[in-house]
Amino acid sequence: MDEQTKFMREALAEAKKAALIGEVPIGAVVVHDGQIIGRGHNLREHSQEAALHAELLAIEEANQYLKSWRLTGCDLYVTLEPCVMCSGAIINARLDRVIYGARDPKAGGVASLYELLNDQRLNHQVDVTEGVCADEAGTLLKTFFKAARKRNKERKRQRKALANGNQA
Figure 1 (tube, one colour):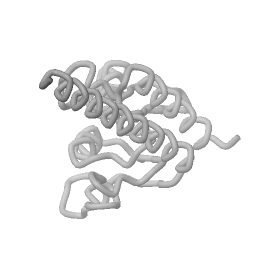
Figure 2 (cartoon, rainbow, N blue to C red):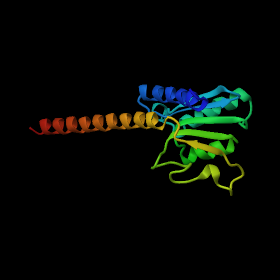
Figure 3 (tube, rainbow, N blue to C red):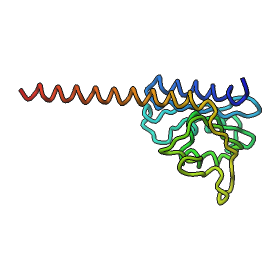
Figure 4 (cartoon, helix red, strand yellow):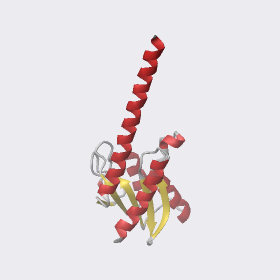
């Protein structure tokens, strides 16, 4: 197994942790000198805090590990293309490289909607590799959202049945 796949599998393990607690299954790890120094998975729903994305949690842990806000010499592996907010944090943290799995056509800030990490107008650019373990990352997300839609449909059906029963 190559290094990119090895570290993306660690990010996927983080994504699975998120799914287990009902979060959108996105995971991230920060790697420095071949060692994981930051991990994160989505915690937005659990915490009800908008900024608790996997990437931001992994970056924060890496900052603490290195005792620096600058993450030069570090790579971020994330299962889904980072959003605009996370792309801004990646640039500000001065990460060298981002490796991600699946594209995010609705919120992607790296390639799908915007190309923030390579915008020459900004003070830092980041090397990007996309598509590492993309099928597995995409399947995790599709499975999660399919189950969520099914739960929502069942809840609506139950509410409707209760409402009809209460009208009698």
